[in-house]
Image 1 (cartoon, rainbow over the protein chains, first blue to last red):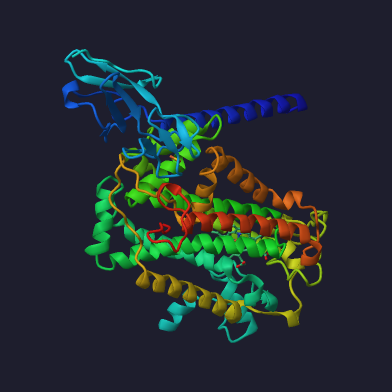
Image 2 (spheres, chains in turn green, brown):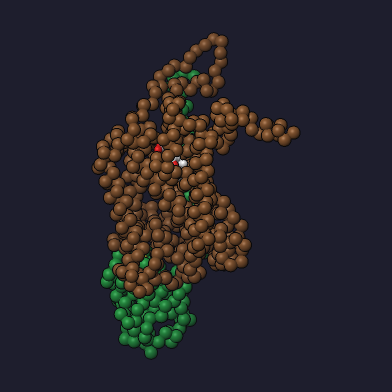
Length: 153
Length: 414
Ligand code: HEM
Ligand code: FES
């Protein structure tokens, strides 16, 4: 074996080795990335408008959403997931604000950050009326805090 | 008969002779990691605090008790939580084993940390032990990830929310954060998949890695010439030159050992006769005593204090206050002040600074009075973390608001 063929052979071997390792690694991570997520639906019905009379916001525990019903403006929904590190915020009727128990973030009734490490206001979610007359919330459609669904009586 | 059986197992001379004492060490798979003789100085409690040994023994205790717990544990919610209740109330010795595992894990974090401090203080990470320091930092990282993954397994409220916050800190890392979080959880939020993944990491992947690294760590101590001598003592001789050529001889063919040129570093450092003692019995007795003391401490803690267990995990309701395990509270206090990035950026910088310490600390001296800057910087970092930790532990109540620990109803730590 001369110098030239030795060099090309070793380059080829090194390249083959790297490619195999790379493919193995990529395959490994792709394997770990789930092909299907068994998780609560991101678009869901919550009940008929009549079930939610105006007043205190209602907490929907499975979906972690607060549903508001303002007599003048209509329905709106806020995600209860703190924008800091994902703890569930709690509505305080007395102070009319959301408190996060984890690192003390406080959000106003419109979701704006009043205090604490939260980087963003709470996320407001689209509320629509589905065909069967139920309220439907879509977590894939964030909206502004001005968004409301008014159902004429 | 009995004698010949024993002779077939233990081949060396009886340990009444010097030859026998040496053979007892190097004819034994488990003991031969020791040299036949060790420096007297290294056996002193003052020299190492036996902290490395204590860490090692705690790992053994964790392995044994963890294996026992695995006989009753299903990594499946909410069964996982019910298994904890079973362990607490119906399994014979269940509370004792669970307590031992929990307290040994917490002691391990303390022991490894103190071991790191003592190695730093002794300057034992300097030439030729740089790489063993790196192995040590990796072990520290493994110990922390082991306690992080183990913390989720009881599937109670504390576990659920501490790990929710922890994995969201991971997710806030730039670029790769969100993907790493999905890989770690097997989903977008903490659920069935996440528990299984944490379980596999906790009982198979991480212990396997830790075992491999501990072997390298202990083996490297020998290869680096044994423990570093006391920092105030005389300088160590530096490693011998390696240029001795392979001797060529027509009469003799060489085995693998013959090809290894130069003297191994540790041979050069064989101590003078009057400074050294045989490992058997002097080192083994002391290590045995350290093992007994460690086990006794863990058992005493397990008898006196019960491992906590809060209500079953409820993804919709965060307990107030939600606190991480106490040794992570410094990080939690940090992230409560600024965006999650400080939970990623600062710790990563710290880990990198530790990892590469032997390579940027160019000061060759190991004497404390030549290292005033290094020692004070180290003390500053350690003290700041302790302050943050104590604040998180005693001064934070509901909604992470400041409370005085003596005020009524102040939130205790995890
Ligand atoms: C699971 C974790 C660990 C185990 C089981 C372990 C075990 C040991 C043992 C048994 C020794 C012998 C002497 C002694 O007791 O001090 C030792 C020495 C040493 N360890 Fe560790 N260790 C661990 C973690 C670490 C960490 C976190 C570091 C530093 C970052 C480290 C760096 C060193 C160094 C440099 C030595 C040599 C010290 C000298 O020559 O004086 N180890 N280790
Ligand atoms: S998770 Fe809400 S303040 Fe940190």
